[in-house]
Image (cartoon, rainbow over all chains, first blue to last red):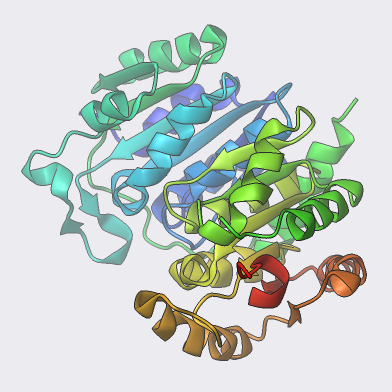
Length: 190
Length: 172
């Protein structure tokens, strides 16, 4: 199995032209540790809403490729949002779910994916047209590239180890990130 | 169904003229015409939600991407959205415009609406969300416009409570 930080590292070079939205905690801290960019937005709370924010950006700006780095705990809080995502099928959205089968950032309690709930099957059942489950780095990298070039809504469930950074607070203030991200999306508007 | 078509048209027109291009909604009796108008308008994107809290995320994303949006929901939908409002829209200073049908107020016949009607304004106050009531057609344009002005100046959520006298026409 792969580590999430290695998975993000593997596709980091493919994020340059995207609007990236991450969930809170380990995902946000790890992506920042790889190098913050002004096209990265970290939703540091509101668990579950990263995919809804991605949908909002994707609908508002169909010319931008949107990437959401979601997690099993967050997605389980907003499974209904998966049906909304599928219903509007933004073709410019790549939805990555890092599934470590636990709520790592708050003590590592196991989520329902540890007892058999299959987020890829749920995404498929919700109507997401392209869905895959990956377990290895090269597989993830290839699926991510294929999703980006597919021009269709894709959910990639990436099974990852339940390991994360030692801390979650970074020196990037929440509002600094928010205004920088919005400014960037404005600057690239034609 | 005695939901006011003329009030719905008036509200929709004001939203449209203010530049709103994305509306998220969950079906609710008083909102049926508004939702239909958004659906029939090729210049508007209507997002039908599974649960109202998603609409907070959609509006936040749309705002950061430079597009104006509004949420249409019942007060129980507002109650279901509270964490999203606090830890997305308020935490990240999103000028969220919420149009909330104020069910469970004087004149309510549905017993199941009455609890929500009693707490909605208290919850809005507790969340420090500025709000006003829309009760008559002559105040629709002015109040929606002022609510939006404050939302953008403060970069915070605001709410308008759609009242019974505006949205519902009793059969005579």
